[in-house]
Length: 373
Ligand SMILES: *Cc1c(COP(=O)(O)O)cnc(C)c1O
Image 1 (cartoon, helix red, strand yellow):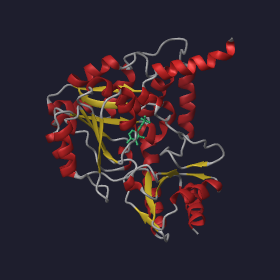
Image 2: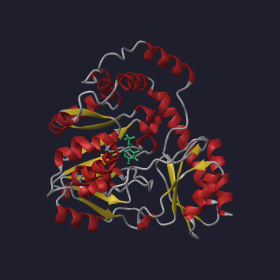
Image 3: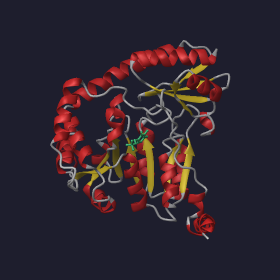
């Protein structure tokens, strides 16, 4: 009676899979084949030619039959040096350490597993990075979202009162924020850190594109860690995020990290990238210039409200509505961006455009103008 097996498994799924998981949708990544991909804040450039060669040589020497170094010693030493953590540690009196994740997504998950309980969950401002909320749901802990102001600044009174009411174990603040592109005021951040009984995670995924740098907060506050990623500087395919904080915190989180979460190829490739970090940084500088030009071009388009950006993307609003059809019309012209309409009331009629090369940006603008016409 093999044809009853599907029914049996469906019934089992219904009884066994947690209802909140069954109610979820998988994280949706649209098919981008054949499209100009301007939806995911990737660096449009590969490594420069001579570096490609060195990379290939490095990969040739790797033993993929062996498990990776579970401590990621070389990679962590590289990051320590890149961030000048020893100097920061000396100023602070804290022992500072680094936690590595398979993307910062995994670090968010580790934090949620380590800290949150059914009573004390996660708090984030909204709109922000959707993973904070999604991972809270995966882990099955309460999540509180506090709306930003209409200009995307922090609503401090509302945030402080939500902190008082919910006493979250974990607070996520992205600086610059995704998808809004702005950096929150340091006074607001400090007021939140002071008011929080929980751990405050400053998510600096876009730090390569801004002058804001909050790393020193880890040496000034006992309840702050700083999270960064290699994804937005040109290594999204490697999946490598990291977090810096006092080793008091990190040695606990380290227990939840799966032993081989950073694979052999990623460890070697990222170590090489750190050695030549100036090359990636130079690409990011070019993207910042391209961003200025993109912002200027967008400002000239009628029917578009353009928000300032300190990241490698720009948020715009279709003042006359129709964001969803503008998105579709751009896609029909071969350009994939991100439509945010419907995601949050503050993002009504909003689109997010990743900053690409000058030529890609021109192509994107041409498609946008046609779509708006
Ligand atoms: C893109 C992004 C990340 C990075 O996620 P990875 O898993 O490291 O690719 C983290 N935080 C924010 C706010 C982001 O936009």
